[in-house]
Amino acid sequence: GAKVEYGKIQSPSMYSTTAKVPAVIEFTRRELARSGWKETRSVNPDSRSASLEFAKEGIVLGVYIAVAPGLGNRTSVQYNTRILAED
Image (tube, rainbow, N blue to C red; front, side, top):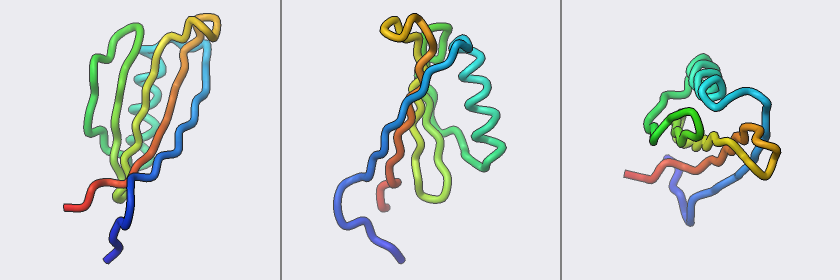
């Protein structure tokens, strides 16, 4: 099998939307589940922010959703990926 030789690979990206945080949380969960991602962690999802984590085929997808005052109070959605740790 494959072996991770060094570090965890991360690839951040971000977008913003006029949709409110709760709607983005619901959309993110629904669409990722449809694509086979399993939610593995959820930290403090509320009307202002959420930190979610999903896993699929050895990859972890982190999603941070929050109101962004610097973007005119739009909702920012940040994604990053990493390889699951070897057992």
